[in-house]
Image (cartoon, rainbow, N blue to C red):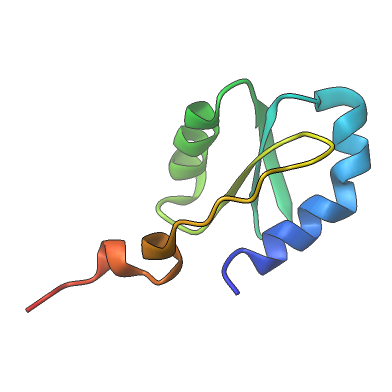
Length: 83
């Protein structure tokens, strides 16, 4: 499952994040928290700057999150080369 490692890591530090960063966005790649941001766009730009175009979790720090799925991303269709 894509981002399984990142989601697991987020859940392990969620309570700590809620105490200090509620309403912000956290950037996680692998099991590494790479920053806290006011806007998801800023988190994405930092992720690209630090690691390039790799899978990354940009999660809003909230008690209850809404999960959004983008099938074309999950299935790798955005990078698909159709012949």
